[in-house]
Amino acid sequence: MNDELLTLAIHTVGKAKVLKNVLESYGITVSLEKIEHPVSGLSVSDRYSVKVRNIDLSKALNIIEENRLFNYDDKSTQAIDDGRKRILVAVDFSDYSLKACQIAFSIAKEVNAKVKILHVYHNIYYPSHIPFADSLKESPHEGLLNKTRKQMLDLCVEIDNKIATEKWDSINYSYSLREGVVEEEIESFVKEYKPFLLILGTKGKNNNQSSVLGNVTADVIEMVNIPVLAIPESSPINSAKDIKHVVFLTSLLTKDLNSFNSLINDFISYQDIKITLMHVNNIMANKEESAVWTETVLQSICTHFREEYPQLNIDYKLIESPDVPQAVNDYVEKENITVVCLNTRKRNLFERIFAPSVSRKFLVESNKTILVLRG
Image (cartoon, rainbow, N blue to C red):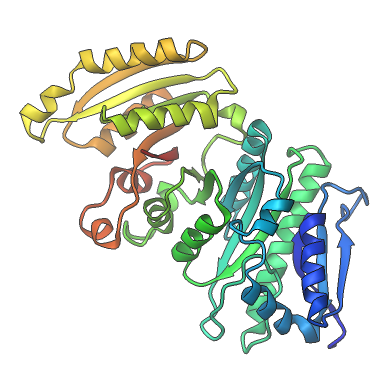
């Protein structure tokens, strides 16, 4: 039993060799195995399984943690990194998590990025940070931990099957497991991995039984400093090419206009798509303030972006309503909008409790895909 080989991590060949050398310098026997498709035997990507003996597992995990291997601030990691954009997908092994992975692979193909799949588990007995391991140290809850490890490996097998049968694009991907509070660990991993986009699957409005403050996706959106794509299980989007009409919510501030440039340059410049600039005047707000944002202002901004991006179909919509989220919901349902894009900022706990953002309100009241940008 102690000589049983367990998968410690899955990496590209460069990182697998680095990990092997580090562990062997501590006297741990390491085996590298190229991952082949489980049915056809064909390699679906350049990925290697790093395996150690069961008896060495805890020691190997401690070495990884102490050496902070593959931190993207580390020069050795930068040396073996291919420099491509990175997409992070947080999963909980649900159906909507698989959908999030599918869309992540599609976007990665379009923008030449690689994908990291992250799962955060909770173990009150052995708190530690494990950046990329999928095998965890023994504990009284070994059954639960082994189940988590098996779920991640099963997900990888399912993904490899879809790639092998050409249902999904072949993308360079890897995975990581971390222990702790979901929101906090995702925020920490974002800082370490430095993705340009975080993708989350959600249950959607009809299946959301939690309170607004308890919504993990909403918490994550307000904690991280990178764009977040939140995809409900019921979303009709299955690939990047399914994105046909995007509504960009704007308060007509400079930060929103900068975010619009980011939207075009980072996400949708590769396809012909309709974009509607939308502003909602809150008729319950101060009339003098709301009167500033006239249709003339919105129209002039729309004209500017049409000249800037002539390849895109850009229009605008001005709505007056006492309820911004509801007004947006009504419009996107009527016009069959694919993605709702908005700009927000990182918010602290106090703000999240006493002043929920529009993104949070809209998230729990809609079944639409939301792209949250940072001004």
